[in-house]
Image (tube, rainbow, N blue to C red):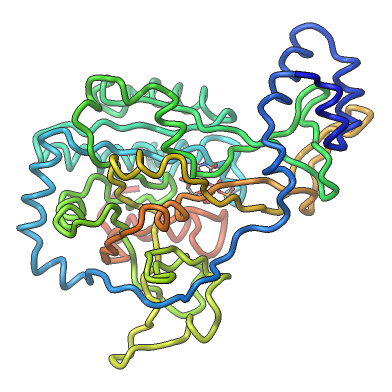
Length: 402
Ligand code: UTP
């Protein structure tokens, strides 16, 4: 690759002079970074927005699920016993809103004893395994920024009592960041600033990692993909799995009823007849406030980042491009003198793909409503809404000793 030509043709003259001055291993590492840049993505300035006809989607309410609980549990439990389910923990995020520089899963929710989020999630998984008398393989997605620390955390905690051969780790990709003029930012003197590329690429990263070649994944047909930051996450739920399998849909989404029209949560809808998650800021107010004859919000199914994906369908859509979201962020960088600056205001763009966009590509999705107070306690912010405090209160309500 002609580094000089590539950099000049993309207006990155400032990186050219960094590269020309760099030496040895640092120069080679910088060249590797440049070779991996997706220049088309870097040129994007607007995220894709829904443009089709948006309509409400039908799904299973809490009552619908309760009415068929035994039947669904039977189907789901059988699938888990046959090794058809793997769990995927999305832990590659940076948790900027929480403001901790450790992996989010290492955050201690305990007040009188050690209760890291990872431990709470593993407890949930172990409960299901004991009910089903079978282990579910767990693949933990990390990022270049937290991989080592995450692996070390699991090891230090004895893998939370889960058999080690059932826990694997894989690293998601990193995408370069630019300032508002499209210039690559430097994270250190000879390193281009990069950030985890969002949670939408989990499957391609998982496949590339080779983890799926391991014995415990040989019968896997379904992936239960979930966020690290819901401390009440109900993982590998046999009822959810059974309901999704029985429905014939290629994906399932756990959803909660929105508390109010303004709630900042993505909503599962139909776009031109195909299930799609519409972000809260994309839903026009007349839709957000619309109500059915029974008084319920018409667009009420808020997603909680707990999905089921069928493996065959994932393979089928693997080559279809997933939309890239351009996000304005505060990106720490090194200025020309080599000084590290931590901006107080957004200073550039990060490029991310989102798992919610996979739903539309998969073509079908079963919304399964769950009881919010039992299954949804997100830890997003340091204070206020969806914070450590609100999540702790919900844990206590569910009988967890903090
Ligand atoms: P969020 O969208 O809340 O992002 O992630 P975040 O990075 O954790 O937090 P903020 O926005 O910086 O405050 C939802 C889920 O997706 C995972 C997160 O770890 C979390 O489980 N995620 C997010 C990834 O695995 N990789 C990413 O690149 C982004």
